[in-house]
Length: 326
Ligand code: CP
Image 1 (cartoon, rainbow, N blue to C red):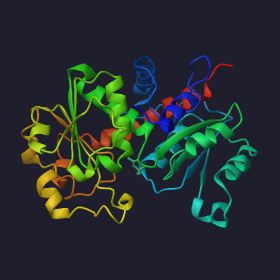
Image 2: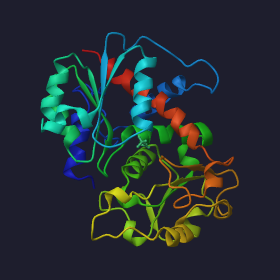
Image 3: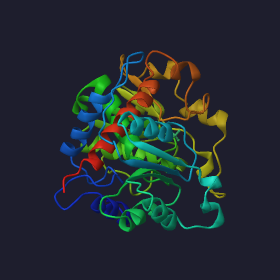
Image 4: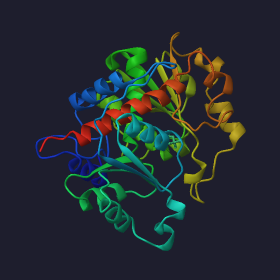
């Protein structure tokens, strides 16, 4: 059952005639809508070493990256996506912006809207910030969620779907297993929402009881505590980062060695999965904690492809929200 925050966000993101205006959550988007974004992103995927696809879709448009939490992949890929579509990109340095003097997020947004920013890409550790901004901005302006607290990371969800589809084909034939700190993972939330919408054959979540997902988790997921059970015959295995920065005082961060010995993904353990199973990780990785370094760098790993597909997905999303018909 979606909570009021996410259902509110899913209602805000579409125009009255069903076009994507903002991307706040994957919840509420239909299989056809996700498929259209994935198909468009597929066309933007570039082969390493070959020239990247470019267009002038964003010519005359300005995108602003507002990251209130750290990022390498998401922020860089939105910047590259904007440039490859011919737009201008503004990377606001939050630490040295007037945020540091107490300016509210909405005042910062209004200030940048006055400079003709058309799309805001926002990462925030707070829930509801994205929806609040979406309610505040002018009609032609779009908000893209680049990570919201522990509840949503929709473009990561899309790039995970694209990577799985490109490597493994139709979702309905697949067993997908997500392993790790699901309690603190917005990546897992969006991946699970997208996988269920796309009709995944079986969705398993393997986690110690202390890191199990909350009541907002999609109810289709089978929650397991045994890694062996979760890996058995899996076609896709996604490891999650232990998000030390999100643990509260009461929770207690797991002992790293104990965690690795019970839940760490290793080449040996992956032998329980399907023979041609792929290994995913959203990054950044804690090597030797949730994933063995040799597995992360080995032939079954698609981690670099996830990153590459992230640029393509962000191009597709930027194009979709800026190509809205009046
Ligand atoms: N996967 C992901 O969101 O990575 P960054 O934190 O580096 O953007």
